[in-house]
Amino acid sequence: MKISRGLQGVYEDAQLIAQRYSSDYLETWHLLLAFVINPDTVAGAILAEYPADVLDYERAVYMVMGRRYHEELESFFFLPSSKRVKELQVFAEKIAEIVKSKGLGTEHIFMGMLLDKRSTASQILDQVGFHFEDSDDKVRFLDLRKNLEAKAGFTKEHLKAIRTMTKGGKPKQATV
Image (cartoon, rainbow, N blue to C red):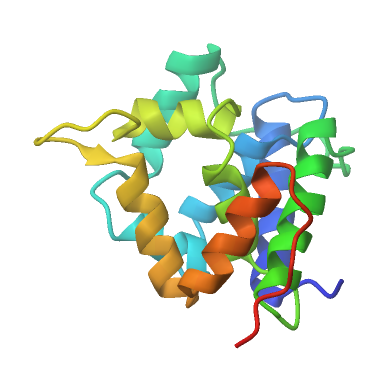
């Protein structure tokens, strides 16, 4: 599937982020941090609407994983994607097919992340302030997902097909 220019830029930035955290693989949380620094993408624009900035995300990475960002890089090379990133991309491609997108975009990758509450990216979002539980004074994870759904133009029919797919059903393309 064709990849949008915005997502290509996110993948490039995520590679750099992964190396600055001395990672061996490209992980979902590297993509999340790349969304944060790319507000011109759908996922980045949605995250930019909330008060957390890149430093909040870096602190969350330290709290969740004990990892620190390193300013200096001795060399740069492309890291292989982790199993989780490969699975996320396959899942995101299915989402893109369901919504009849011409290509894979940040909105599809981000939706895949938000539907996987066990991922490191989700743990970092929780640490930043997007909470799974309902609370009057906190932003809910669900609110972030609903914002994405609205901005990406996902219809109720799309969401129903995506939910069916996440529950192990066969994904059906939405008819719009």
